[in-house]
Length: 83
Image 1 (tube, rainbow, N blue to C red):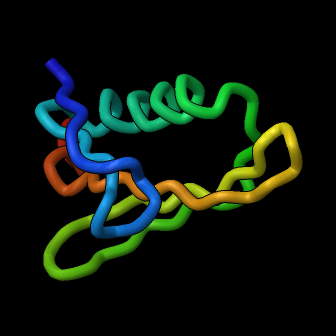
Image 2 (cartoon, helix red, strand yellow):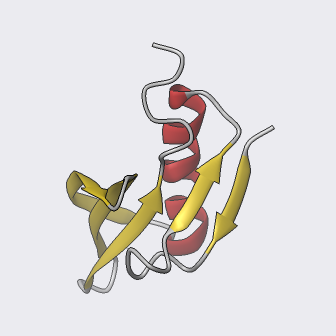
Image 3 (cartoon, one colour):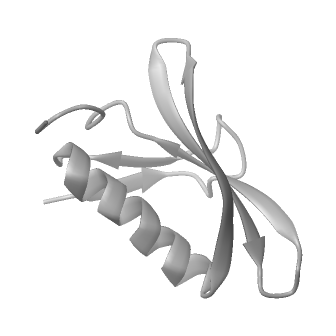
């Protein structure tokens, strides 16, 4: 069962942590979390970051009101599993 822990996703230190899943389940959960938290949004850019032995996905999104935000997910536990 997929676990979602960690912070609010506003920085690497407060990343949303997704674990106990395959790569495909984890990626699906990233988009589920974004939709639940922000409703409709436009994906501007997605980047992979490696920092201090951990792997992160950075989503740059634009909200319905036009504001742009960054959301960090720590994906070390599932990155590449199940390929």
